[in-house]
Length: 194
Picture 1 (tube, rainbow, N blue to C red):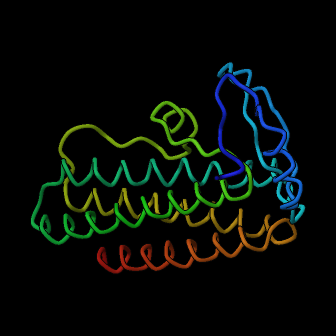
Picture 2 (picture 1 turned 180 degrees about the vertical axis):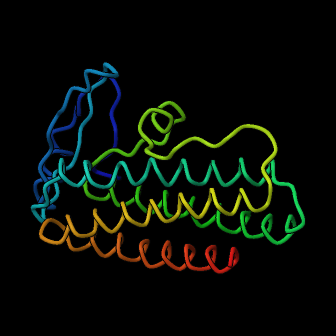
């Protein structure tokens, strides 16, 4: 049984559940989510990480990664030009990679006792990426747009990785892995435009 699961509109009924959590080194806190009107039960990390700070650092990256994957699909659907096939195939691959980063970030949040959201409204409200133009996108414009977003996101991930150095080394390591990959993709995209 996952000890940090979300319980909607009810409290933990079993004292045995609470005892099992305490034996495992976990404590439980109830937090009322006023925005949604339900009660959450969350696990406080036994390693002493600052859960609120981790959420403040990692959640925006998760939202940006989901948005980046969606924008990659938008470019994929509306791409035109002489480099259509090569850029289309790159975008297919990149969208999968961006989605996997969003999943890894969400799983890290949940493993530390923070609930991850990736619902369309959350992503639309919270992502920090500039929107894409509507309609057809030329191959050169698509390369420029995705390069700009990948480079910007690499900067954001670098900043978060720096901020997490003294907070949670595991989350910092995850960010560094994502950063290395984003910078590799930025390099490949810049090389394609040379």
